[in-house]
Amino acid sequence: MKRFIDTIKNIWSITELREKILLTLGLLLIYRLGSNVVLPGIDTESLEQLQQQADGGLLGILNAFTGGAFANASILALGIMPYISASIVIQLLGMAVPTIQKMQKEGESGRRKLNQITRILTIAITGAQAPGYIANLIQQNVAITTSPSLFWITSIVVLTAGTIFAMWLGERITDKGIGNGISLLIMVGIIASLPQAFLQEFISKVGQEGGGLVLFIIEIAALLIVILLSVALVQAVRKVPVQYAKRTAAGATFTGNAARQYIPLKVNAAGVMPIIFAQAIMFIPITVLSYSGLESGNANWLVSMFSNIQGFWYNLVFAVLIILFTYFYTAIQVNTNQMAEDLKRNGGFIPGIKPGKATAEFLDTVLSRITLPGSIFLALLAILPAFAMVAGVNTAFSYFYGGTSLLIMVGVVLDTLQQIESYLLNRHYDGLMKSGKLKGRAVSAF
Image (cartoon, rainbow, N blue to C red; front, side, top):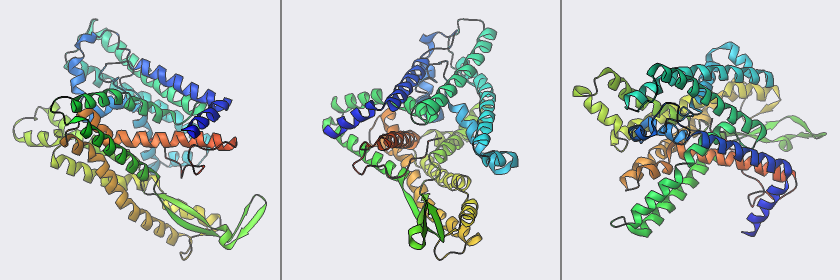
């Protein structure tokens, strides 16, 4: 405990780090306050049905990512999700559009251009999603105190401005604060529902016929184990040994074994994106059937299967989709041909493997082998909330036993701790961990 207090004092004594942390906390507080500001022209007493709709499914996930802003009909109801969608589109286009591929290789100038394109695409996506959100409000019989035409115009403008404001907050945190701003905004939204879910679970367990305090302690212990496994998944890497014929560093020339290094291939290079993709795909059948009016009759079994998140077939299809999307997104994120080419250009080679095409094939084989257990573990982690619900954990608290929420929180926390660790070590202070450093660096959630 004394060491932890000393570490906090060391953090606070670094002026630059202290200012960054205070700025980050201040901007996050502004974001949370904005999540509770209701759109103009809405009667807040009529939002009960909307909040019930956001209790599960993809809308429940969106509501969690926005910290309840979706169910509150807030000015930040769409949150940062349009920006994430735009970022994913840009990443996918980078595979097929030569112009974007060129920008990705131009360094800082190319990054600025891509950021500007992403911002413009975010506005376009928000403009397309805002009318759908407003139409959903009207369908859920949310009371409107102004004229319909005025409500539509003002709401679209406010929702678009809210997303732009959230995007600006995230970029300011990344540039001037500590951690990845976009990921922090998502994590804060997720954590916002944790205290209430924890309290509800505690009350339900210590109450009559609730199982008692012992059962609640067992649930908390199981949650800690799942968190540890999630950390292991995020941090796990396969080190591929690399050797350089001659390498110069700090004025000294190293040859042979002294020039040996490693290529760290992450077991879960795709992060949380496979879960997000799979959840979106799972939600499509219900959406299509509901809007086409075919949700009853012969298609009723399909609606029941994709609506029951505790059902066997839902979780089986969900797990298979996650495994497939993990391979797909890993192939997008990790370019083994480019890695082999860079290695060859710098005079490096993998012992026993010829440079060039043979190296790319070797790296691709290793990546495929480690992705399989990583994808299976990711799929198991994604369906753990369903097992928690079956075991008697309430719905809100069960979401923290796995899935997107837990992986985002673990990844963002590790990334932020790594940045704080770097500041401490650069100022010759002890780090946050006993070893003096965190192993590896967590990839940002998005």
